[in-house]
Image (cartoon, rainbow, N blue to C red; front, side, top):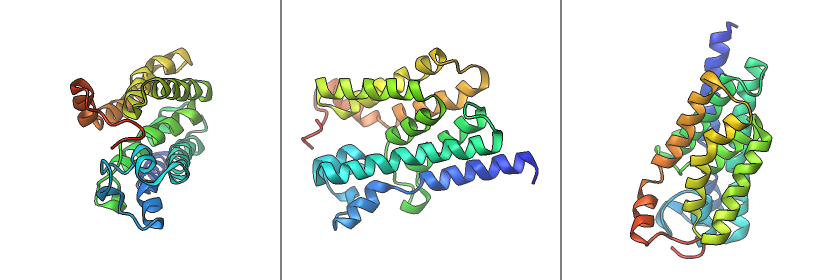
Length: 200
């Protein structure tokens, strides 16, 4: 199989994996359409507010693993966990999460899936970003603020961890997509009306 076709299969596979929305799946397990409750966003924070910590933990783990598996697919083809293909496959999974094939392209904001990809590509950098998210949320009680902090710090942390050149392009696009998906959150933050982790 030609390398270019292998790369294409890896990226498409990553998108399909990303399209599995665990917030939707877990919500259905509890008899809830996650799009119709709370903020309506199919993500960990909304599941936490509407269904509690246990279901939210399931969503967080599932969505994070999507990014890990997607980046691993890119690594299998390229032979390098820090290759442009590995990062590109991670980006494809985030796109799948945000615009899922299986859920009428109504997805979440890609935070956990992006973090999963980064944890695979640059583990220390991923842990630093996860810690930044936790610290900001612990202080502010606002999940979106932690997510935006993580997204803004993503590229600098990657450079600190040694990523260079074309590898940074899909990584930057990944975090840019996360920020764009938080448009409404940014508006509410500026208005002082953003949801906390315990309030819709």
